Length: 359
Image (cartoon, rainbow, N blue to C red; front, side):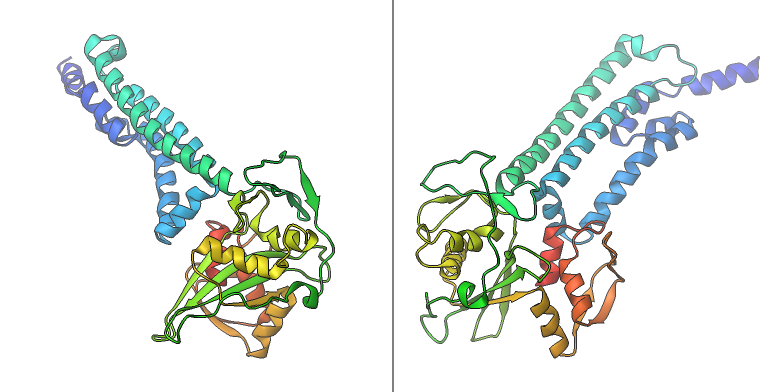
């Protein structure tokens, strides 16, 4: 009896309030405090898994985290995880308060008050985090067009402020020849020999097996001729609803703008290339002086002509398409380099990580 009573006395000394507070800090801590090791592991491991994923994403720096939240599908996933994690924390708090030796602790006024205060704290913190995640999701959904067919895109508005129906789309016309597509008169030149030189580099998603020629890569290289320093700025291909330099609004994806300008010469009398160069300078806030374009086959051939390119791959790539590359320094031939700059579906990858590889 003494041993049993002593055991009960020790266990009863475990405070349900302390257990609740510990579980509020991290699910499972309250159970560990109460001597319930298995329950502690059950509640702690899922949260540890989520934390490990976030740390892996943050390993690439703030840019990777920003890319995660700016991608609508990822932001929505984060929003759902925030809600589920909040519910998991409340469950852990309630369960941890069932300290051995007590009877129905949540029915006692003091423990009920503790649970209520912690519940409000969980709702407040997760509500704030959820609101932030929703703001990123909403902004990303407004900036980027959702997934559509490979050969079509939402049509732009034709007048300032006009918003066409979401169902209004156009079918891309056949690919133009280089003479038709890539001719432009000079738009701007550097003011002095010391002025920065801005070059628009475009990667054209075209090949003999494709029916479209979309500018999926829009990269501005800004060169300081005095120091030789180069700054690279990539524009995501799915940007939509952006203002045009003439005051109108383009509702389609930015990668389709050049094709749209070519197929609608009355709306864009400057021609497709000049219109694109003007628009990129307008969005950048600085004039674009020169322009270069390359398609898939041309990129591969360019790499082979210089006997390959050396890259320092920061982390392993395992793309579901079949492309794999370990972390470290590699010498890539044209075919492998093309796969490298197009890969975006591996774990932790997105259009943003692909843009870094292209740079």
